[in-house]
Structure formats: C-alpha cells, structure tokens
Length: 339
Image (cartoon, rainbow, N blue to C red):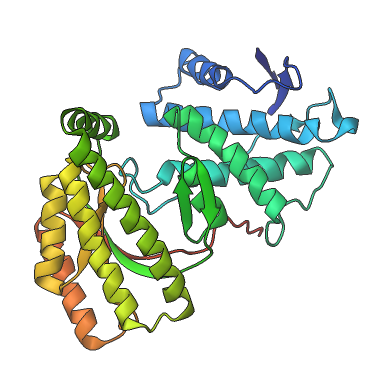
C-alpha cells in the first residue's frame, strides 16, 4: 500500500514496501480513481497518463532512496509542479508515443527526486551517463508496463539511447546513430495489435509450414538489413546499398501482407508512394492500421526535382486523407535541457 499525504501544496510520498518489492501499479491507478472521486473529469487517455506520472515519481523516489543509506525512511517531499508534455507524434498509431512519454517522464522524475533528496542536484545535467540512461530505461519500462501490460522494451530502449536498435528474444542491442530519412504517413486507421496477433496466430495454426517459412524469411530480411545499415553508416553515399535497402522494404511489406497484418489504407499509401514518387515503403508497428514509412532517397533531399516530386506525393496523400511528415530516423535519445 502506498499512502499519499497532502501537506499544503506539497505531496509527501510514503511507501509501505519491503526493499525488494516493486511499487505496485495499482497504487498509482488508485490515485487517479481518487481524483475522479473528488470531482475531476478525466478521459481514459488522461487517466492512463496521470497514473503513469504518479507511478514514475513513486518508482524514482524508491530508486534513489534504496541506493542511498542516508535517505532510508526519509522520502522527499515532492513540491507542486507542472509537467508540460508536447509531441508531434500521433498517439495510438504505433509511433512509440507512449514510450517517448514514459522516457521523458522517467528522466524528469529522476532528476526531480535526486535534486530534492540532496543526493545529486546536478543529476542529468549535460549528457546522461550510460548508468543514468540505463536507470531511465528501467524506469520507463515500468511506465510502459502500466500502459501496455507486457511491452517488449524495444520502444523505450530506442527513445532512451537513440539511434537504431536490434531486438530479438527480449535482447536489445544498440547500433548507434544511422540517419535515415523517411516520409511518415498516418493511415488514420486505429492500429489493432491484438487483432493482428490473433490473425497471424490463426494462420500459423492452419498453415504451420508455410507461415514458419514466411517468418523465417522475415528474420533473414532483418539480418540482411542490419548488414546493409552498418555498411551505409560507413558510406552513406553508396547508392547500391540504398537500393538494396529499398528492395528489402518491398520484400518485408510483401511478407507482412502475407501474414495478414496490412490494411487497404496502408496498401494505398505504399502504392501512392511508388506510383507518384518511386518510393519504397512498408507498414510500421503492429499493422492493421497505424503508420506507414516511405524510404526517401539518400543524398538528394535538397535537389529541386526531389522537392517537387515529394511535394506532389504529399498533395496526393493529403487528397486521399493521409497526413504525412518528413522525419529523420536514428537520431539522439533522451536529453535534458535546463533553462
């Protein structure tokens, strides 16, 4: 049980937990329910976001105190504070918005608790150390569990460390920053993760040998892409490498379509990209809706022809009801700026 005691405008957090116990998610959810009981009107997404904030503050406090014997049984008073969150990411579309949210709140919560506990008032200033990044990632994963139940951990790893990551069987390996420019297109169709998993599972039961071959081919596509990306990182002007990546985008999308996880809107987006601008693309995320990415040509982003072609594509997508935005993948991870 976690008790919350209001003291003027401050919030005292008092845990009744053993050192080896995790703070239960239910404690944060109960706080949100108590707010609703006091007359606050919250939408479901707001409830989840607020519960995540409460949970991360509680976990951050526990993390700091358990690593400092001088602070045992002396939880800090958390002053009234405003957390302002802004994003360009579409929410609920498979773009990793919940992971980005959790990572940012985890970093802010850890900085706040460290400063209030007098353990390290400069925690997180400048660039985060590897130990601090690991701490942020662990905390963010806890927030992701509150929102999703059993997240893979890959989204929070990307948001924490930046760059590209390789994920297999729960193991996350960072590959560093390998900049790729894509057009991110929102299908406007809500993604259906559970439904897509069910469809794939059902096809696997009906056609085990065929589906196993498809999944094995997808694994080989991924391994080939990793090799190409490493080569591309050393020589981003290598046109042949980029063309091979475009081939793999087409192959991967075909395999995903065969699994049954695409959607007519995603198919139309990819078709428009090919027909109007000669781009290669695939769905991203769980499928069944959500987002598609179209790989933009390397090294020609400033050419007049490329700009005109891309403008035409964006207009065609907008006329079909699809919002799009150019983004760079493989950027930096979490960073704290203090004004």
